[in-house]
Image 1 (tube, helix red, strand yellow):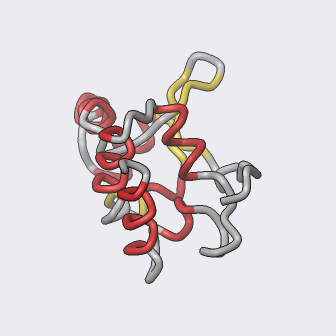
Image 2 (image 1 turned 45 degrees about the horizontal axis):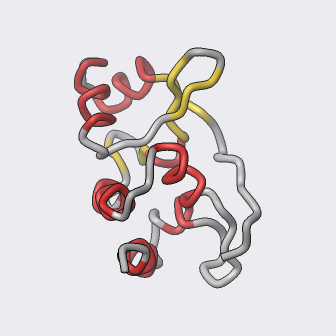
Length: 115
């Protein structure tokens, strides 16, 4: 994997994520604690990369990939960096590949980090 970080397509704050998912903000915060979703703090506000939420749901494979990354010892910042580091063999970055036929390959690569 190259070390070129890719900026997410956009950022969404937690109240807007809650609205998209039709759940209370407290549920979104629980999803963050349970590593079903990932957010970073910008200017004191938590934001989720827009592409991690596909319409009214979180990307199908995201929770599994996040679990594997955290089990491998990654923290939130490192997991975000891994998801948004360009990889010419995918092509693109792992986060973008989660929303398509390459999602299984992303999960396999995340699992390999634990060994």
